[in-house]
View 1 (spheres, rainbow, N blue to C red):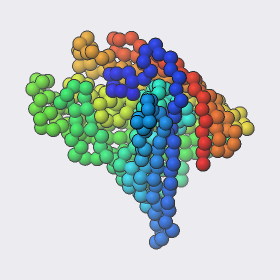
View 2 (cartoon, rainbow, N blue to C red):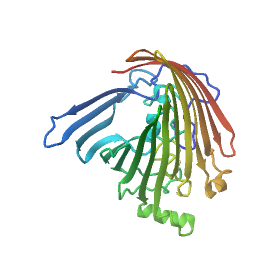
View 3 (cartoon, rainbow, N blue to C red):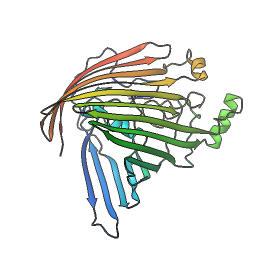
View 4 (cartoon, rainbow, N blue to C red):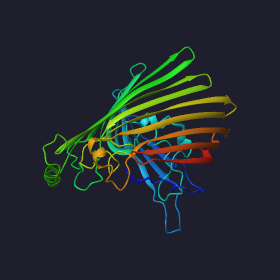
Length: 364
């Protein structure tokens, strides 16, 4: 999808048929482990991600995406990962999302991108970042991790309003709790993210002149987020809930020009979450349904400039998803999915999209 103020999905009124990869690209992952020595287990991970989503001739090839390349050292202290891997904040939300195996939102035949699943309508994409992350050894049912991640500059739709000085890394953390009570199994979590971003001297001077007054967000900004969720299972039934709130992080993707800042460079606030229920009938057949939405809290400047803006400000988007899948074998799954997405803009109406897809997965 495009920026915060534009719709990058199927054009209004279009009916499209596409042969595409869904939210999950093709994955070829390898983990190499050295023999245990001096109580340490050292391993390396390489994950190669590809897909087939492209239009046009063979000149429009899809680049290989190396999302994972890391070194992990594990011992009595837990484990330390150094390299590129999935971010911590919102990672449990996406890893428990059933649309990982489907198409979800924005199911057009886009080039060089997968579909979006529930990204932007239930959570913000965790994304893949260079990082140094420590995961503690298990303390009974409790596990925790904390990491220093590459900071993400945040831009504004207005030139010379962004915060791009990454003087310090982003800090992310997660706390997990697992339990089993009778036949009820559960996994609960909370996570968070924080980074401080500065502005260049030129941008600061431009903003002071344009805004006309001193402000606590002119020289630097704090970008922070918190999330929570859980998965409960009982016999064939499973239930997932997840929610988040963030300041300046964005509605769909993290950093960049994804709506984290208004036209004056002030951080916007966002919140959202999703609910999901699934039932396993046995013999490999499952049915599931989920609903989620992400909401932007408009700033005073958003209200002030709404009439003059040439592109409407996205207020919220919501996504309904139903899915049936059947495991023909332990490594081959067939999937039928139906979804409905609505996007609503401040003072500018709404738009909706309906998707029906069929597909298959191979696990090995």
